[in-house]
Image (cartoon, rainbow, N blue to C red; front, top):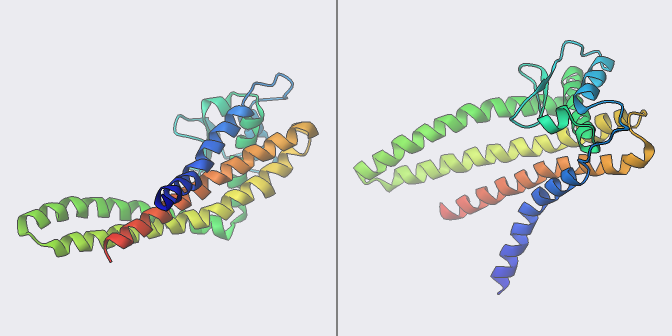
Length: 225
């Protein structure tokens, strides 16, 4: 029984933030005719105000994000063309990342460097798992499986590091960049609590991802002890 309760609490801890994010985004996603513009228009305005006229705002189907390589803010359909608290809060948040890049925020730079390392490492590990798995079967060598497990734990540990660096970057984009921008009069004071909820929910996404990565590392480490 204690094991079942512990497992349930662990699932709630990991997946609870994800469900909260979806609920919060939907709750404040109603269209508002009184807003002066869409999320995409707000992003363009904030970028121009920050002197980032060269950074475009694009529509995407791959999730809201700021691309530091192409230097472009990308928003999903609902946030690019939407006039809702969620749309403008998400747009302001992504612009916050562009401003972090402009200002040379150290944590933002570390995030980029870690992701650049993680992507090729993940590809190499995928290839090694394929080749090593076949080799372990052919040679009947369990040591290969152990080596692969160690590589996987290392890769997941790097993923945890990315999440740990990402969290303060996300919090900064929400509270030090997006919230003050929204408070300049783009939305009314009565809508600010809703905007805070959306920005808080966005940060919880990375908390959940970090917890999931830590859980996976712990489980694999136990298997290969």
